[in-house]
Length: 323
Image 1: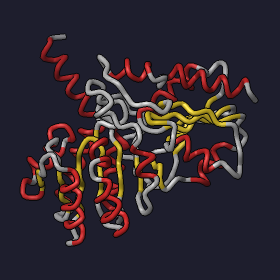
Image 2: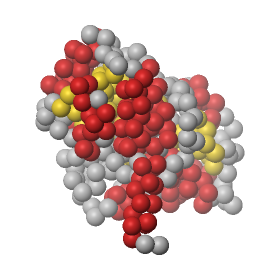
Image 3: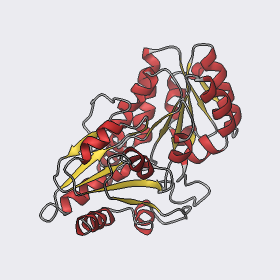
C-alpha cells in the first residue's frame, strides 16, 4: 500500500470514528434543515469542529474568542430570540469558566442552549490536568433543569446531536477528542433518557459511558469463557433511566460501572443512587478522585488510571468472587 493510500484510509477511518467530526458534520446537516440553528465557538473552532459549520454558514457562526462566559451569555440571549445555539469549547472550559452564566441564566431560565464540551476526560492527553476535564458529569448532573449526554461513539454522537437539537431545554453533551471503534449502529435514533443493552449476559452487568463502552465490550469478550457479562450503554447521565437500570440488574450477581471520569459524582454515583432501593453490590471503575496528567498518548493515560478492558474484567471477577 502506498503512503498516499494509507493516509487516505486513515483519514476516512478518523472521519467515521471521531466524535468531534461526527458532531461537526451533523451540525452542518442540521444547519441546512433549520435556519434557526446557530453555533458559537471560543477560539477553538478548529478543534471542536465548529469550523465545519462556519464554512457552511458563516453568517450563523459566532467566534467569541477566549471568553467562554461571554459566549454563554450571548448564547442565552440568542435562545431568547428563538434561535437554537450550540456553544463549543474544551469541556474543562465550557462548564468551568462559564458556570455562573450556565446556572444563573440558562438553567434557571430553562433556556434552549446546547453546551458541548469537547476533548473531555483524559482524551486531551498532551495538555495535562489543566485541560483534562474529569469532573464535568458531576458538575452538570448537579444543575437543576440540565440534561447531560455522553455518547458512546461517533455514530451515537451524530444521533445524539440531532436529538438534543430537537429537544427544548438546556443540554450538556460531552465528547472525546480521539477516534476509536464504533460500537453502536449508524443511523440508530437516539432516545434521551434511555439506557441500551449492547451485549446480554447472566452473571454481572457493566454500566458504561463514552469510550468505556467499547472497553466494557472488550472485557466481556475476554471473559466469555469464564463469566457471562451484560454490557449496558448509559449515554444519558441525566435524566437517568432508573427503571432501565434496575431492570438491567435483575438476576445479576453484581454490578460494575465504568467511566472516564472521577468516581465522585459521575456514572457510578448515578447508578448507585438508582439502585438504593434495589441494592446490588457495585464496583466503580473510574478515576480515583485525582486530576489528570500529561502522557505520550491517550492509551498510556487510560492504563495509568486503570481505565482499560483488563481493569474492567478484573472488577467483574471481583464482583463474582464476592457474591
